[in-house]
Image 1: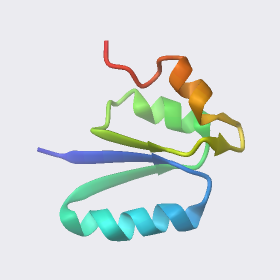
Image 2: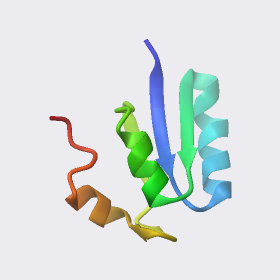
Image 3: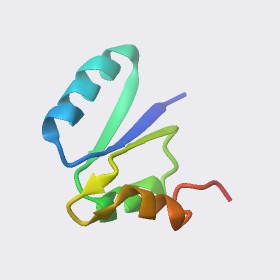
Length: 72
């Protein structure tokens, strides 16, 4: 079973640290640096989403309010 984690963060160093910490444990990390592309990637329903609250193209909390990450 794949263990997918979506990281939506505009700080490349944060993404790098998360990848270095979790890929050796068998997690597949998918990273997006903008909210719009992250919301699109979230439609593939990763197991975990790590979401930055302040992104260049939007507010991470607003993305949650739009119910984008909720399971049907």
